[in-house]
Image 1: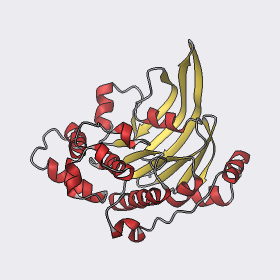
Image 2: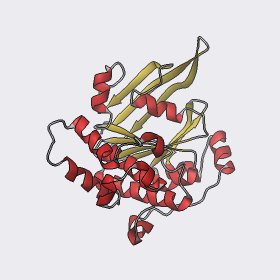
Image 3: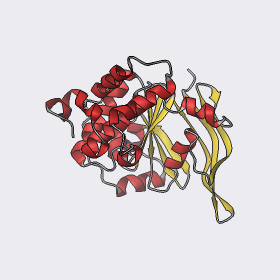
Image 4: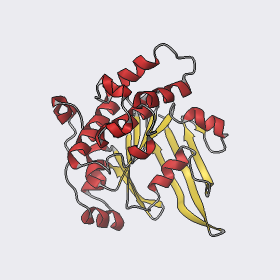
Length: 276
């Protein structure tokens, strides 16, 4: 079966003081339909840069020097911005690390979710609000949240709104960039349980970026270990965490905390009250 996402020989550069610095080198990986691929590595190793490249969102000083990015067999590199806009949110979307920065502070959160839907379904009119309310239910938020502003919500609730934005158009692939990094440990576990439930119900594939091996061990089917802009080891989650072969992977796993996460959806603390 063909991969949902296929990346080959991807090399990325940033302009630095009139010179170009290679930040990602000759990267290759696949993501299958409904699969979770984890990106594991320390800060600054290129994980987020790859995520931005996959969505055509590199900053002005960044560029793809070479390689190929194919989504369902369609080459994405070289697309016009108008073509990228039709893909982002509809076929591939992103959950950002800091929901407070990703949300408009002066716009009601329900309208922000609806805006994504309108951007990709211009003929939809009467049922947009109903679709957003259904999506709020999917992320386990009450209907009255629709009219709230971001500052009125907790960090966990804001992250649920960002997740709702990413999933409202039912994309094939969601890139989650450290989506629990700014949350306390209890809310982290709740958000991870939510994401696992959404993955199972909707069949969406994920690229899940994290520096925390415990999160990926609980959530990812496969893991790609990043170091200095390249993948040094890739394999099934059980193999990477149980018997890593690369010295960097062994060093990384031994130096980071590995607090286990229980992600059984029916045991989620969300079942007993309003989510944080």
